[in-house]
Length: 510
Ligand code: GLN
Image (cartoon, rainbow, N blue to C red; front, side, top):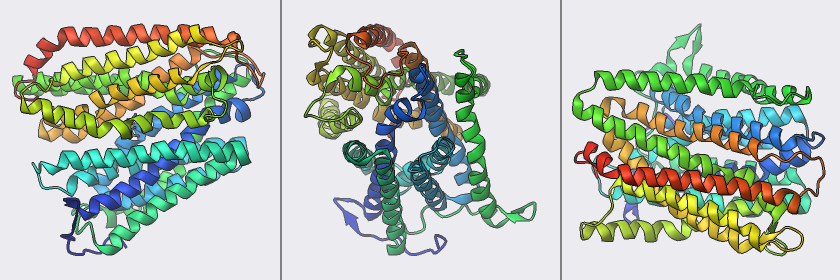
C-alpha cells in the first residue's frame, strides 16, 4: 500500500507542508500511548507485578531501567533498517502495529504477558520513533528556515500526547483498573496509525518515505523477501527481549540483590564499543572536524546526565508523589506524569521566541551556556523537592506546589537543552556520519536510563506494605533529591566554566 507514488500535495497549513500535520497527529497519539503507559508502569510493577517482594522497589527500578534503555537503544537499529530496507513509511507502520499490540497485551493480567508486552513496545518504538522524526525533516528543502519551527510544532504534538495521556490513563486505572488504562494507551496508538494512513491515502507525503531505491525490500535472504523477514524477526525478537527484561526477576526471587541483570552488562559493552568507534572516527577526521565532533560528544554526554535525572519522573518521582505528596482532590500519582509535558506546552513557544529576540540583538547565548544553564535548572528543580520535606504535614506529605514548581524548572532546563542539542548535533557532525551521530544522540537517552536505574535502586524502600509512606520514606527521597541537586548544579557550573573553551572548539557553529 505504501509503495503507491502520488504527487506531493502542495497544500500548506499555517505555512507548513500539509504532511506535517498528519505526522504531528500520528506522533501525538504514539506519545499518548507511550506516556499513558509510562505513567502507570512503575506503580503497576510496585503494586501488582512485584507486590509480594519486600524488595519490590528495587526490582521495579531495575526493570524500569532496562525497559527505558532498550526502548531508546532500539531506535538506532530501527533507523538503520529503515535506511537500508524498509523506508520510513513501512517502518512507522510496523512500529505502530507492534506498539499497539504491546499495549493490548499489557491489558492481560499475567507476568509473562507483562514482559512480552514491554518487549513489543521496545521493538515497536525502535521502528516508529526515529523514523517519524526524520520523516518531518524530509518535508522541508535543505536549509528551509521553516524547518526549525516545523520541529517545534512537532515537539508540541509529542507533549500534547504526554500531557493528556497520563491524565486519562491514570484516571481510568484508578477508577476501573490498571488494564483499562493500558487498553486506552493501545487505542491511542491505533488512532495514531489511522492518522498516518489517512495522510498516505490523501497523498500528502508525495514520494517521501518510500523504501530506498536499492530495492532491498524485495531482495531475498534465505529465500525470504527482506520486507517480510524484517517484521518476522522483529516479532521473534520480542520473546528474547522479554527474557532479558525478566532475567532480573529470577535473580530477585532468589533473594540476591546484586546487579546481575543482563541488560546492564549489555549496555556496558555497547558503551565501550561506541566510545571506541568514536575515538577511531576522531582519529581519522581532520582537525576542524575533530574539534566539532569532540563538542558533539560532549553535549551528548551532558544530555545523558540531564536525562538521567529528568527520566526519574516516571520512576522515583512517581513513587515519591504516591507516597509523600499531598495529592488529595488534585490528581493521582500516575497523573503527575503529565506535569512535565504541561509545562513544555506552556513554555516551548515563549522560550523559542526568546532565543529569536536575543539573536536579533546578538545576545542569544551559545550552546554550551544553554547547556550549563539547563543543568543548573535541573539541579535547582531537585533542590526544590529536597527542601519540600521541611513543609511536610503530620502524615509526612509535602504540598503539591513543590512538585508543580519542580516540574516547571525541569521543563525550562529541558527546553534549554533538548531541542537546541538536537539541531547542533546535525551542525557539528561531518555529513558522512550524521546518521550515526543521531543514533548516538538517541543512545544518550538509553544510557540515561542506566543512571535512572542506579538512582532508583539507591532510593528503593524495602516493604510490601501498600500504604508505605509518611516519614518512613520522606527522608530517603529528600536526601536523595538533595544529592542529585548537588551533582546537577555541580555539572552545570563545570559546563559554564568550560564554556569559553567549548565555544572556541565549535568554530562557526552557534
Ligand atoms: N520527551 C521527548 C520525547 O518523548 C524526549 C524524551 C527523551 O529523549 N528522553 O520525545
